[in-house]
Amino acid sequence: MIFHMVIFRMLVFALGILVVYITLASAIRTFVLPRSENVFLTRLVFATLYRIFRFRLRWAKTYAQRDRIMAHLAPLALLLLPIAWITGVSLGYMAMFWALGVETWLDAFFVSGSSLLTLGFAPVSGLGQEILAFSEATLGLGLVALLIAYLPTMYAAFSRREAAVTMLEVRAGSPPWAVTMIERFHRIQGLSRLEEQWVMWEVWFTELEESHTSFSPLVFFRSPKSDRSWVTAAGAVLDAASLAASTLDIPRSPQAELCIRAGFLALRSIADFYRIPYDPDPNPTDPISISRVEFDEVYDRLSEQEISLKPDLEQAWRDFAGWRVNYDAVLLALTGLTMAPYAPWSSDRTMTFCSALWRRTRLL
Image (cartoon, rainbow, N blue to C red; front, side):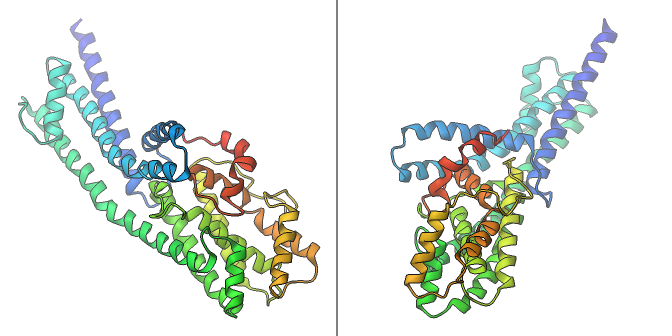
């Protein structure tokens, strides 16, 4: 009987170590590892909150109300993450304390909590329990310090992202649209200055891919104004670059094509993190959410403003569709995931074009 109890306590001790290991691995892979890692515990916190918030949206009647509700999702999740980690560590050590001789599970809970929060009101006995108490106190302080240390980094990335989104309103309107962007540059006789935009936004897309996969909560951080979104801004710039590469009668711009590539690679990386399905190698003739009628209307609108366009409308449409197909599905899926505000050629068609895609998307 005693032998069986010893074996059982050893198994409980091993289970406690496993729980602590899983919890610490989640914290390290979420905030320290310099690459995108889809961590179960972190994903569980966000997915649970996301479903709660979506349920709460049933009572929101306007987009402004929905935006105010969803604005609290990411900050609240960040506050709950250290609580989840501390809870995991506490439960793991509770099992280890019990395995080392603490009489009851309730006593083990008090000893673990006292050690983790460095309160010291629950005494320990024996070298083994003292070592556990010191190690748990160290881990508790480390987990809190980890989140505090990385919050400035996350908000710095958020600030850089939003600075470009805010600047885009001057160039592409609110809500942002590629056509508006081209028209405004044409009016100030600055179509040649679009090259500067492609360079700036290529850098922006590169930073977006790095920050929004390494610090996944940034995806759900909403813009200070409800009519702005990093997703719709990305869509407007990519469409503008696609129109410049396919439709505008200007010298070929390798920089615009590089901007498009940087953009769809960034959006695909974020989609990969959230397990959003898409075709990684689409055919240029695959269907896109922009209809030929819509493209023709834009072509006529730009022509009426005396913007120089390529004369072959058929080829222009094929080229535009060939560029857009690379980011069409992931752009619409991300506008749906983040509940982005209305914007032409992106969030305005999310529900109709992307409903089947979204049903296959899993946060868990």
